[in-house]
Image 1 (cartoon, rainbow, N blue to C red):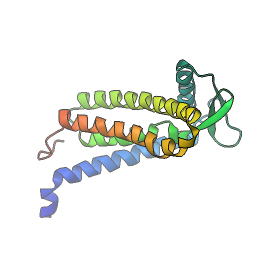
Image 2 (cartoon, rainbow, N blue to C red; image 1 turned 60 degrees about the vertical axis):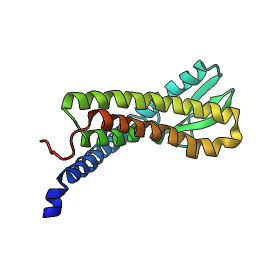
Image 3 (tube, rainbow, N blue to C red; image 1 turned 45 degrees about the horizontal axis):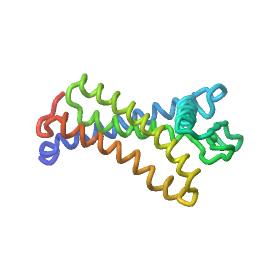
Image 4 (tube, rainbow, N blue to C red; image 1 turned 120 degrees about the horizontal axis):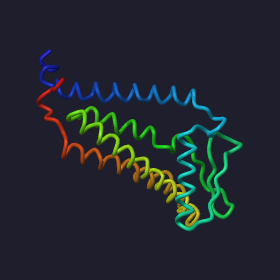
Length: 183
């Protein structure tokens, strides 16, 4: 029992982090199971991410086209008529945002500051993710021999590194004192 008293703040952090992560992940799975894929294929969030990525790649000066895949639940994104990437549910950053907000809630300060940071951070992660997919698409088009390196290593580091920096910023500027446990 002494170990629990001594580590109350750590146990609270872990409980909030994993509890929040599980609840939001189950909620997201419920959303996926019930999403209307007739209008937005494969589901609304991924569809919108793909559309915004297409617009961003066009903005960068490339002739871009996005179509629903006939082979799997994805949107295919191409440049100059060559389809280069598939935007699937895992590309929409929702899981990354759930991980981000679970950590922030576990280190919550006051509700107003915490919720504002979660909102701002989630928007930044979303925007950063669309930029990531656009740059990956352009990178595969320009230097296809590095496709595996870009998709498997560089661009995951890009998004998770950004989330890590947001966490560090939060801890340095808004953390609660781990020696005191609030309600």
